[in-house]
Amino acid sequence: MKDIIKNINRLGNIHFYVFTTWPFNEMKKFCSTYELYKYKNITTGVDNAYTFEHFFNATGVPYFAIYKKDKTLSHAFLGKISIDQIKAATQN
Image (cartoon, rainbow, N blue to C red; front, top):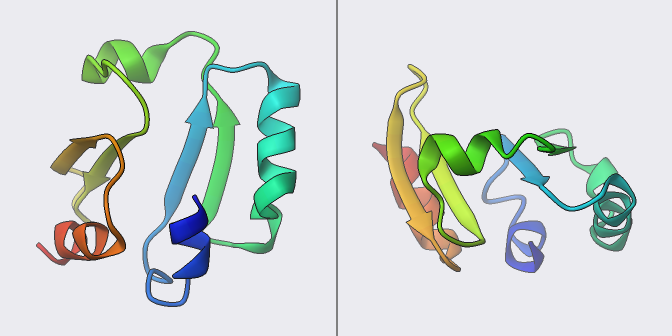
């Protein structure tokens, strides 16, 4: 999240959906720590039903699913990725 916030100007046309299965109060702390409310292109939430994990068979975090404008999956990454990887995956 630190790298995304630090490079938000380079990523301004990308919308991020950040969510967790942690309790809501933990997500609120996370949002406050990174001041995510400041960014119109970041949406946060809690996935209580583990829908994302089951749909993507995600085996760990962070997990990045990058979609094209036509809403088809472009790339999926498990683990930390660079800003350049995010940019490249969204260029296709």
